Length: 91
Image (cartoon, rainbow, N blue to C red):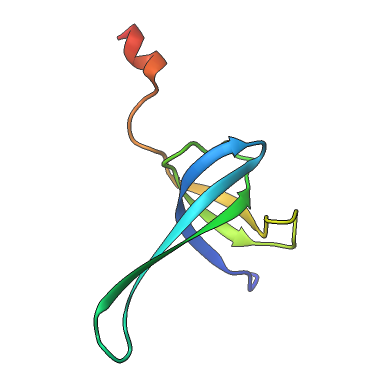
């Protein structure tokens, strides 16, 4: 296996062509004050799989693909729950 960083996050936007915005959340304990801290970061990732908003995805670090993109969606860990409005109309 290669040494590229891999992270999991949730897709928050897919309005761009072949690009998604992934929010990575992290929870850790502060080293001095021992309080639990929640931090999040949004990154742009290249998407060839067709992710939807709410999908949990695994992204892997890559060479710079554009001015903002440094990550690629490797796989979809879990699809977003709930169907589209088209499916609900037919039911």
